[in-house]
Image (cartoon, rainbow, N blue to C red; front, side):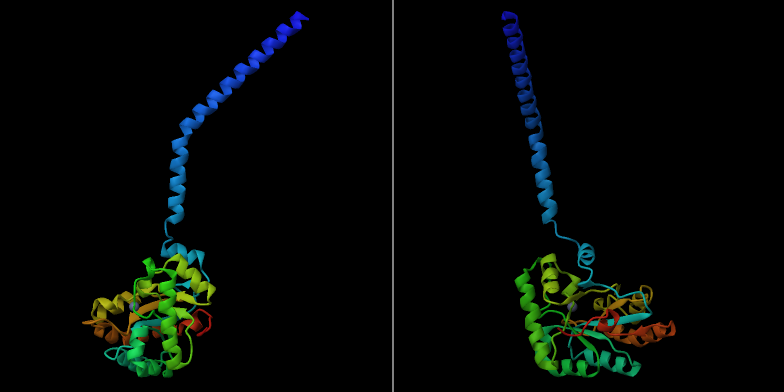
Length: 268
Ligand SMILES: [Zn+2]
């Protein structure tokens, strides 16, 4: 009997010792791990807040956010910052002579000042896209500001040519995830480019030609301008245009508007 009690005591003591050891160890481990856990938490929340790059946005929203078309022998010429009476009529005249249809991205504040010129672009058979009202950098603006700029411009375009464009080109190609999501939810497509003429820098004809012809390929979306700010010089870009068209045609390319290249509708 007393032997049994002794064994029981020994067992209880052993258990208590094991328990104390376990608790101490756990506390030590926890104390040691705590700052690490905090670090990881900080890292994780940082990586969640880190905005996605344009490349990541294009991958994640590949149906909404385009920068090129399928690899067929088609090219879409696109002209931003229109309408501008200094440059847009000259571009229209060249495209008319060459029999090329292109896509023009309209700035709302300019369309308000020059509705006849916007109407002329449309009547010449070109596609119209939305390029914001006041040409801001959208990356650090709210979704609400993005929405206001797009909708204000589309009202002006609709009352001038009769439709609300489906295609949006954000100024400077910059946009954030919230804005892409809003565009997707509301049936728009965001269109950037994969060939940049850099014509806004006032480059000469040969440089603009080289920038386009050295980078272009099947399904390319080419960025040029047919409007600009105070002191802009787009004469190099305009002079390069007939040569660009002719040399790409000689290589078997066809010029199409973005709705045709991307198999999408023109309007909402
Ligand atoms: Zn622009």
